[in-house]
Image 1 (tube, rainbow, N blue to C red):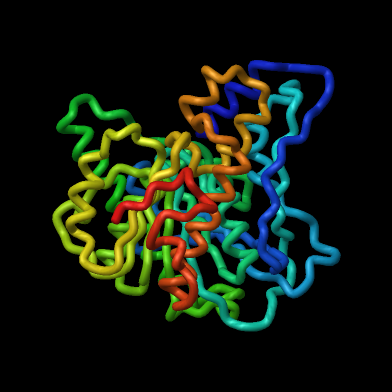
Image 2: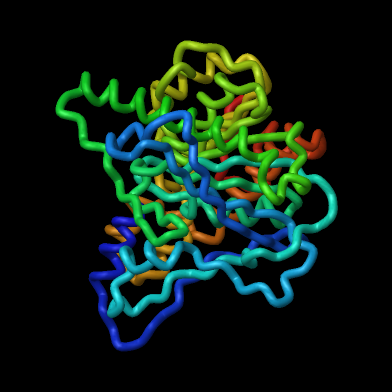
Length: 359
C-alpha cells in the first residue's frame, strides 16, 4: 500500500536522491497514456454525503504510433507524490514507460480494465498494465474515489480515503458488500463512457477483459456477473466477496495467487466450484499479497531489511516475480480475447517451475 511506501520513504532521509524505477515492458509497442475525469451525475458519492455526484479518475493506456515530443508520465500525480514522498526521503518516485498524449497507433485493440486493491490507487498495477499495452492492448485503470487513499482531480483537489473501519464482524460483512457494490457501479459507469472517449476509435469494445489485485480481483468477478460486456476476468490474490460467492459465472476466469504454503482461501474454493466456463488457478511460490502490485518492484529498492520486505512481497526476486505474472496474465487475455496462444495456462511449465497449476 502507498501508506507503507510513504513510511519507508520517510524513514531513511539521506543527502543524495536515488531514483526508483519500474521494469520496462517486454512488448514491441510504444505506450501512450492520458487521464480522464468522469462524473456520474446519476448518483451521489456513496462515501461522502456532501458530494452530489460520483467523481472518478481513470487513465487510458494504449499502443502509440510515436512518442517523440511526448514526455514520460509520472507514476503518480504531483499532488499524490507530495503526500507520499517527503522532500528529504532520498528517493525519487518512478516515471512510467507511458508517454503523455502520444498519438495512438492504427487499429482497434482489445480493452482490459484494471481495478486496484482496497485503499490503493489506479497506479498500483502499472507494471502489469504497461506489459499488456506493449503487446497491443488498451488498458483503462480506475480510481475508486474515497476507497483509494488519494485521488487527485484536474483542479488540484485530492480526495482521500473516507471509509470508516467497521465496529464488528457483522458490520465488516455489510461494509465489504457495499465496497464491492460501489466498485461494480463505478466500473459499469466507466464501461458506459468508453464509446464517448477521444480514444474510442482505438478500442475494440467487442473484446473487453478485466483484472484487479486483492479487492480489485473480486471486483472483476462481480462486474462480470453484472455486465456481459466483460468477457474474461482475473483475480490477483484477492479473497472473494459479494454475489460471486453464490452465483455461477460462465465466462473465462483466472485465479492467480500468492504462495499459500498449503492453506487455501475458503472463498477461492467456493468460487472455483462456481466457475462454469473456462477456469484457471495458479500460485507462485515465494510470493506474498503485495507481490501482485508495483510494490513487488519498488520495496526491494528501498534498502529495507528482509523482515520488513518479505511479509509483503515475499522471498522471490522482484524481476522473476514480475516476469512470471506478465507471462501468465498475457497468456490468459491472449487466449480469451484474441483466441490465440495461452497454452501456458494448461499445465506446469519448465520455464516457470515456481508456478503451481491447479488441474
